[in-house]
Length: 256
Image 1 (cartoon, rainbow, N blue to C red):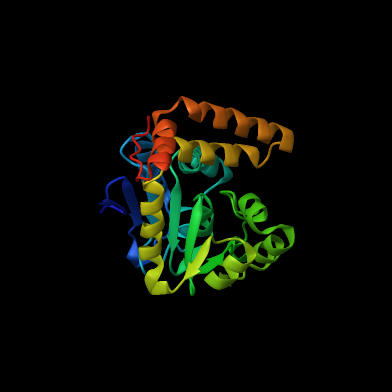
Image 2 (image 1 turned 90 degrees about the horizontal axis):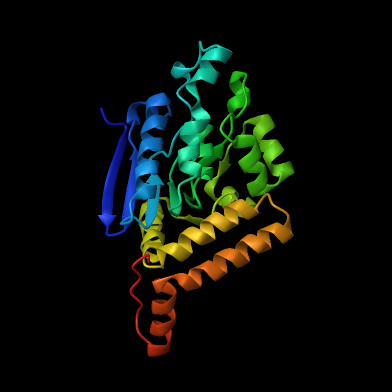
């Protein structure tokens, strides 16, 4: 059974849906490998301009599949090299939108935080509950969460394992938008459509510079920004965009 469903709802847009309804989309090694394969391929596909990642209308991903790791040894965990699979998502050059309904717990929350934009339902539930089973986040939960919402909110979530709602996630900076549960998928696709219509070279440079600059000094980050800004003047899309502006027409971007 394929635990990941790839679709192309519109030109330039790919939708990846985790499909393990019997275990609330829990993440096992197979799912992580499929995610890595898809993100690697989509990142290299010139036809794809935006990726929507979702678990569907009911649940995003309710965490790691504990049956997969309960009896593992430290050497077992090391040999799995899970960080390489997560890196395929983190390193994807295409904009990624996470559409979150229901549970985004543990690895599911970490997976959502690998996206560039998070659209959350009002009743979505974000949590890092690993402490409740004797472990801690191992795929960026202590680091990405802190960078997203700050030390004190992150410490509360991590040390209590308590969930927060979609509205609370938006209020503290963990979600880009919060909408009615029934409108999450529609809104994510709407955003993807907007991004897919933008010049892809500019989009990829914005993503690359923003992520690389987060942990650099301001001076170094501004240098990265300037270099990328200058580089885009070598693109046909820059000429097309500015020409269309002057001619008061809709631009047609080719990614060149």
